[in-house]
Image (cartoon, rainbow, N blue to C red; front, side):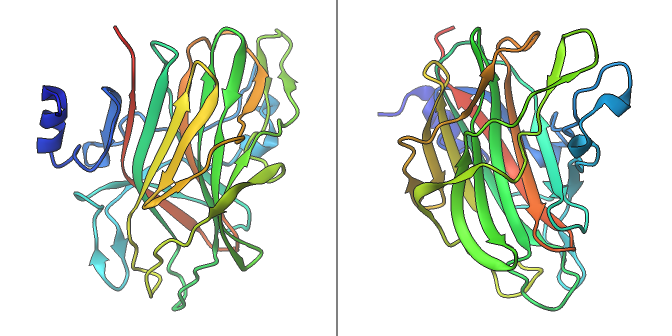
Length: 288
């Protein structure tokens, strides 16, 4: 039997499409604005020139009504606006959005989202292999470690279809920024070090012309106490997570209880790639 809270969520059409844990940390419907999602910029100290060059031009999020040149305005899955990430028209370029939060207790957390992706409709072809990848990651710190679960749907590589989920546990080199000893940086979204999730192949719905898109469901579960990825689901497919390890680093100054969430999109060709997020929900289990 569902409790009163579950019944209330089931009666709300905005929340009933999700399966949250008992506590909702945030629910972002982008009809209400950016909701705290912002650009990822590199760490710097004293001067912006101290930033790692890979961070210098990551494109920030924007709001989109899904306007296309041939079909007019599509809107989002439920409403008018989605959060849109767009790359520059350079192969390998990234668009990134993150939300900064903190955890209250080290326990289970669940991220859910409805998303879709397409290349810019600049040609009259389907272009289904023009988006290289879309991904999601967490940036978490406790008293001992900073750990970063990375998950990536590799759609295509060098023009060839891949259609597979990957993860990354290989740590990029840490670089000291400035001279105070307080700031370090590493470009964890580098294209190196990705590993295939066993059985992680998945074909997503990709409609017949470049201006048609269908929305996908995503769920990622973590156990903050065990520093472990415990669940990955996209649409009807639940992927195995046994042995999928996060990236682990030493704990850093000033980041205690950090619980950041990031999404990104990468283009495979010299054309912009777009990731759209209709809504995002982060829930968890804690006692007080």
